[in-house]
Length: 128
Length: 443
Image (cartoon, rainbow over all chains, first blue to last red; front, top):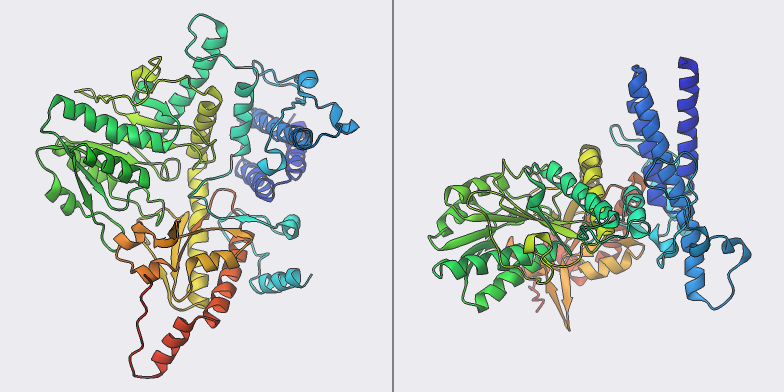
């Protein structure tokens, strides 16, 4: 059990770092990487299984937060394209239509899978 | 390519890959070469923390009920979110009751509501009560609110700070009168970063039974605030200075005996206990609440980094430049704010030469004139030196790389501008000769 927990934690750590490095904003990207490294370092000596599980659950929620930022950035870019030009939406952005793909943000329960969340934003890329 | 090489060479000299002890930063930031803009004007506003934005998203889409709709689930879930945000704020400042928080559109509205709302209410009850004490270094919204009240017959005392930017307690004590209603002093000054002695000011106000208001928009979430210990009766809060959304703030009104009452400035549906009518923007309030909660967790970590950056910049600039002045008290301060005067270099010109770094100058352009900062003038900085000031604002997301680049660029720009400055040339000549030099008058 201890071995799988360690592997789980390491996988989570790598996943969080990997996702954080996808932020296009330099400041968000570097902050996320620093913060994740610090948080895992601070808690590396925790032995209590209950506390470990609590921390792991929190880290999973934070990972979902980071992934949602990536998805919302993609649609924000599509939104900027739609608003700024009269040309048809490129095929790869058609799936990010607000009306057809506003799914899976079920705030009433914790997300058990990657939440594909899409929003429009006028600010687009400049948000990050 | 030449510019990139230039930066790389200079940064290598600084050993920019070194990871300073005690400061969280990443080595080998591979993306740094793609950076073209640096934001170091954090006193103006801050970027939204992604965690705050994530928390706001449901309340811009699925949770759209009016928090004052009492008859259905949509309203109840919005109301719960608003109350949770109130709870977060109260917990951070050690308030006693959620009802002490009134949401507004920002710190400007909160300041107006506190100053004008409070003073007009108590003046209506007792016409003799018409005196307000404040300082010359308050935010513009406080000063303009006081000026507005002066046109309505109120008496306002604007206290002058000392050269460090601190309001002396003796000055406050001397100016408290039987007809004083309210004293208002900014917690952390937005221009020079100085922290006032709020605890003792609050104690003095309590002893003299006058209400104490503080503009904490630059302080909340950055320095510890305890409204009970500091005897703060009213406090203005802003979200966008603490990595929250723009357009939302709050006013803390302490519940005590006798109750603090004020005249509302926004009339309508009676929201916020009649003190500020208008439908609450649930998503913005949630953003403010989450920003506050993050600040309570990250304050110590952020401050540790900011202190390091503050000291690093001071040491670097002091070592590589002469004729520089660090404005404001260097001890009782918020270390995310650094105000520096570079003599013989005009502040606006320096900002133009640092075109990829966002900073702020100590002066404000008004029509055809260039006015020096009134805050710097109040602390005794002469007009010509006030024109040479710039303000640097670090934030949670600032990296050591950005700070190092700022230092290198500042030194190079100042040296370049001084090389074409006749004033600097004259100063050097003066040092080399014994004769007096001509004095220039800016205006």
